[in-house]
Structures are given as C-alpha cells and as structure tokens.
Amino acid sequence: MNYRHAFHAGNFADLVKHACLLQLLARLRAEPTPLAIIDTHAGRGLYDLAGEEARKSGEADAGVVRLMGAADAPDAFAPLVQAVGALNRGGGVRRYPGSPRLIADALRPGDSYLACELRPEEHGALKTLLKDAPGVRTACADGYAAALAETPRRGRALLVIDPPFERADDYAQCVATLAQARRRNPALQALVWLPLKDLETFDAFLRDLEDAVEAPLLAAETRMRPLHDPMKMNGCALVLLDPPAGLTPVLEAICGWTAGSLGEGGEARVYALAA
Ligand SMILES: C[S@@+](CC[C@H](N)C(=O)[O-])C[C@H]1O[C@@H](n2cnc3c(N)ncnc32)[C@H](O)[C@@H]1O
Image 1: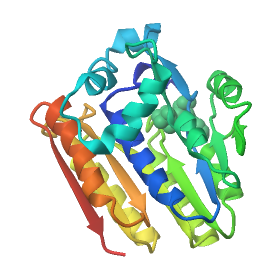
Image 2 (image 1 turned 60 degrees about the horizontal axis):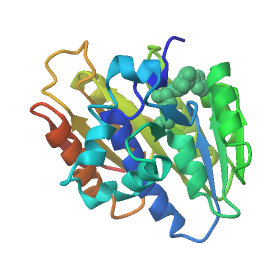
Image 3 (image 1 turned 180 degrees about the vertical axis):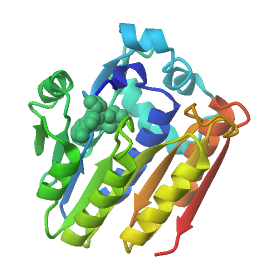
C-alpha cells in the first residue's frame, strides 16, 4: 500500500469529487429521514497544502488554488469554495478538506457517518480530526468489508467509495461491494470515484456494474486531455447509483469547467445508464 493522498489533495480530481459530493449531500439532506453514510476509503480528512508532499507534486496549485482564484467558476462549486474558504480565513489556500471533513460537517442530528481508513497513520489523523463530531465513527479497517458488514438493512444509506486503484482488483471489489450492499439494503445510494486512463477499463467497469446491480446509474467523465496515453491519469469519473433527481446539470457544470479550464483540450460527459 504505497498510495498517499497528501500528494494529490486539492487536485482536479478532488475538486470534481468534493464539489459533486457536496451537491449530492445537499439534495439528500432535503429529505427529513435520517441518513447513514459509509465511506470506504476515507483518508486523513484534512490536508496541509504547504506540506512536503503537496509542494512536491504541485497538484493543488493546478487545482484548488486555481479554483479559488477563478472568476468564472460555476455556482455548482460554491459549496466547495465556501468550505475551503472557511478553512483558510487568513487568506491563501493552505488547508484542504477531505471527504470526511465535508461529510461530518453536513450531518444533521440523527444522521450517522462511518469513515474507514486502512493505513494506521492516516486513520490516527482522521480519528483525531473527527473526535468531537456528533454521529461520527472511524475504523482502521478494510472499507469494502466494513461496507458489507455495516450497511444498514433498512433506511436511507449512502456508500462513498474512493479507492486508490493501486490494486488490480479494486474495480471488481467496487462492483461486488455495491451489488452486495444494495441487496442488503434496496434503498442504498452510492457515489464512486474512478481514474480515467483509457476508456476500455472504465467501460468494462460500467458494464460489470450494470450486470451486477439493478439500479439507475449516472456517469460523469472529466477528461482533462484526450485519452491517448493509458499510462497517465487522463481524467476521472464519478458513478452515482440511484442518484437524486436534478444532478445532471450540476455535474455537467462541475466536470465541464474542470475539464475546460484546468485541462488541456479536455471535455466532460454526463450520461445516465439504463436501470
Ligand atoms: C483516494 S484516498 C481517499 C481520499 C478521501 N476519500 C477524500 O476524498 O478525502 C484513498 C485512501 O484509501 C486508503 N485505503 C487503501 N486501501 C484501503 C482499504 N482497503 N480500506 C480502507 N482504506 C483504504 C488509503 O490509505 C488512502 O488514504
């Protein structure tokens, strides 16, 4: 396990994921019934962009730093811009929130959040960050196994799956976890993040997911450049399982601005797959 998210925090892929996550949570919060959220790959929850890893990669400079200085970012980014601004009241962009910080801050009384992180030092930082957050538990555990064990059998539930994809079986594990968790709770909704290297891998994932899960699916591709070199991360994709209505134009705005303004010859596609 070599992946360290500190190198990538605040990059274009985080912007897409976190802007969409906040838009999704806002819609889910509009329903009064409690929501149980399980995050399979949580990370440490808060990142120091002045730290060695972020400075070495420069990915945040090409991502969140540009977003925070952009005059033309669409309204769909406003919740993320506000969350980043709140962490950096002194000016500049030094601190960047991970999904756990954003999710914990969005919980209402009665909601719950389980954040799983396998790496002990990342989990230690996460646990400290969220120690006083109501409704929150963290686990230093495999997120796929935890999702299967902890998805409630009834009531509203959201699974957030954001693996590093450094293991060949991450695609298959995502599909199997979604299929089994949705069988356990037919009301389950989900947000999955994936890298876009070549289209064949992503298309194969979508086909496997369609075969395994009977639910409406919405896919959002952010291609940062033409997908010529499969060795590079050329973009990212989000797949939403049984999403709330009205998300398509919001995803188009987020993915479209990211690909167009931060990419090189980039483009975005948002499309529904048949249930
Ligand atoms: C892409 S990062 C997560 C970023 C986080 N979701 C966010 O948006 O702020 C993936 C994380 O998953 C952790 N990880 C890797 N394999 C895991 C597993 N099987 N279960 C739980 N966490 C895992 C890694 O240590 C890493 O911190």
